[in-house]
Image (cartoon, rainbow, N blue to C red; front, side, top):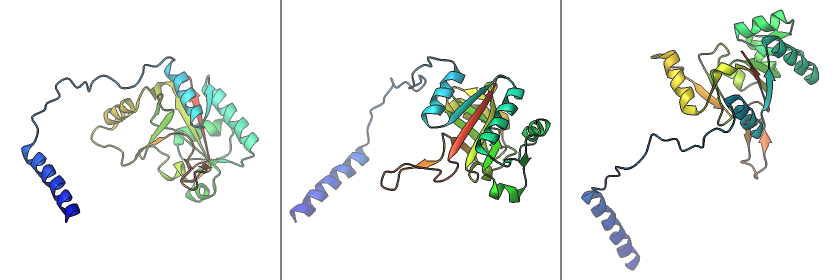
Length: 212
């Protein structure tokens, strides 16, 4: 009875508090000022540092030509037969550089590496922002073991809120059905606290940033 009585007392206090409500108004709360520290370096350097922290690979390219040369070198080092790419503009670059690629649905299922563009890069977290409105679709971000991203300096934004704000402006009333933030390779430590790479997606992430 004593335990039941204690519970009843607590519940009664909770009920009375809910009924009585509170007139406390916090007028001095600051929702405008950012809770994050200011950037010490430029956005591209900050992004590179943060991407590296989450085990991503960063490659800076002075031009598109340098990008295609670096991609070719990566393909040779990894001994890939081809890379999968569904983005038409990027495929044109690969074709001009005579880099082997495929873009069919059947090829995607067997692809070791997938090359995509992105919406934005978030400097503060080293994150890549992608959406379903891109030509690459959805599955290429999950199926291949290696995800390669082609991005440009103009696509770097400071924070997540900036990326979301720009996406709203870009697509207006027709927002993508999927907006995803990729922060490093897929990983999990749920099983016995052992870090496993590629648990739910790519084991490797490469971001090629072109100064253009």
